[in-house]
Image 1 (cartoon, rainbow, N blue to C red):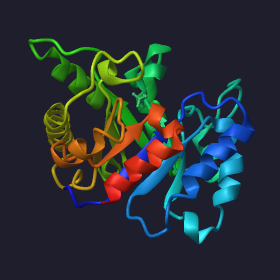
Image 2 (cartoon, rainbow, N blue to C red; image 1 turned 135 degrees about the horizontal axis):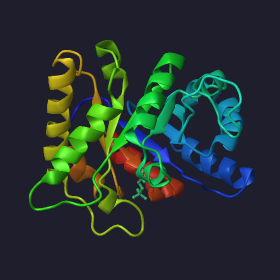
Image 3 (cartoon, helix red, strand yellow; image 1 turned 120 degrees about the vertical axis):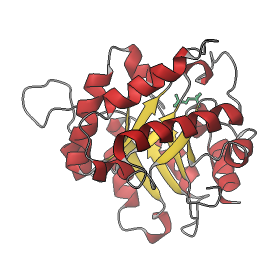
Length: 259
Ligand code: PGA
């Protein structure tokens, strides 16, 4: 698993504050990425910056390992849904991935049923869903395992077997995310969870259908812990928040994955 192709996703959240800053950041990342790398890099900026980035990437061989992702999508196809953006609209401007079920969106009221509809709408439009799951805290009785199982089962309810390998599962323990993180997760915790997640998926969809499904780690990923998560945690990739806004750290993370 350590040798398989990795994916690194940069979740910029609601940053930076201007198009000019966003383009600068995007350029600083681009210039350090060779077209020869094996790792897929997915940049998920605020939607408003996506068209400009799509233009930059269009037809450029050198930038072929960089892809665009959104941080959310509507589950509706079109119509009277003020403020919403559909999966087809994202696809149309060149977006390939979409982060769904991030804990920050769940905190705003999104639940597993909304996420389930968003996953189906994304798959239907040809976007690759990045499904985030993660418990708020770990209890001694291991109730958090059931919590994760429930998140996965409800979010993937009704998804057809053939589509499961297209979905990326990002395990992001909420207690390890952001500047208020309680502590960093350790690779062993991720490894155990990714085995558990694969078991849930194979029980639900069959072991064959999930062979290519990637399980990645997110939560305070940085250049110092990434190698351990690769080696000991056997992560298929990473979802990076804060350090994706720092071109030096982000490209360092990419280089470590490549090496
Ligand atoms: P962090 O964020 O890397 O800043 O902890 C991760 C995330 O929220 O996806």
